[in-house]
Image (cartoon, rainbow, N blue to C red; front, side):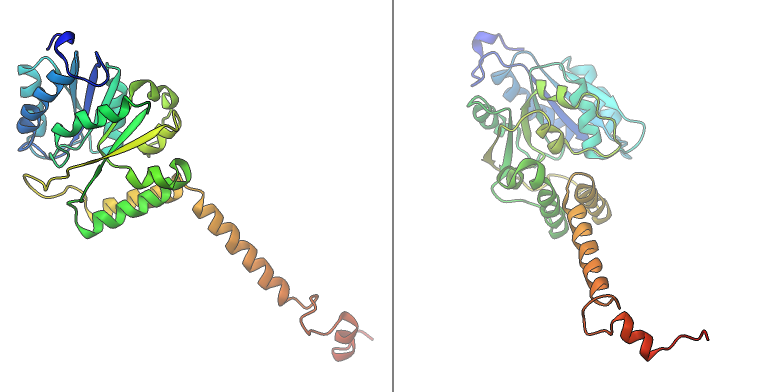
Length: 278
């Protein structure tokens, strides 16, 4: 690793942990490491790469083991099954050893060469910075689910910050103290970060097409994540339920015989429908 005096980092002697959730990406991991290393050598000392295998069905874990065996700055975590991207990220975040954490995807759609731009923005007084794609290289369903997720995030992050949220993030490791005791099976890293700070920033970054394979996000997984965001981290469903209940209550009151909606009074009802008792 490079001597701290030789670094060119906006944060000075920054120490970096890069966390990457891995799912069926054996073909892209070697290039990811090859492109990350010169960036980290120039901008951090020490640094590490944490590859979290999220129950991959291909040869991703053997590749991770091989890379970790050749590079002492790479660590691998092998989850017992597929828990989902945000759960895998949380596992890596909790294992991180350094002052600044970078999260990014395993498919190289987030170019490692953009990391210095996020670090530069972080040095301006922010606690978390998103790399917002100039143009997203995703399909319709992925973009739609992303829009729903950001809609749910607005209540906790604010509309402007939620609009820039992405999987490419840089944040101060100390933020994880705010959610150290979080144990729910459903995780949103972006919401958890709001528990530790309100100082969010964003920079425009390049977003490349996938180099190999197809997206591991099925429509079902995207829909479930968006629904969980809407019900688990937003007050919108509660507000809708409250308004619906209020509307039904009002409509029920208007149709009640006791209301003043043109229905006969109790006395009128007695005359129209005489008692059956003698």
